[in-house]
Image (cartoon, rainbow, N blue to C red; front, side):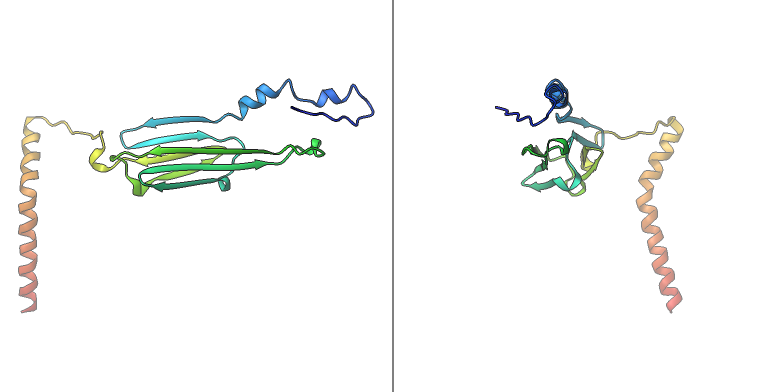
Length: 169
């Protein structure tokens, strides 16, 4: 129930400043939206939080659940200061994290009322890799180099150790 007390000397002037006709539009502009996307390298979560500031938000991780929480208390309007018209908003979102998410490198940013959370995938779960295409002769050379690489490294280490002992003697 809303009680309106008018103290205006001009009675026809007061209804012009009641924004009840605009209330559905204003209510729609205050709604929060959520967007979730997946790339080959990360999971991206995006939340529009109108009216919130960075200091109103808190993000925590416990038992593989990422909790995003925000509380915002707005005071009444300056033109309607004789009534207690404060609005408190509370936002809570829990995200259950899966085993393919890298929990050590979670990034979050907040700009212009949009909170973006990026959770990278673990390297062994990355589903995208570029595979070079070789012709038959270059493929054989690449496989040979790949197979000989550990042998070459071991031989190089042996040579360096031998040279080190020769120089000290």
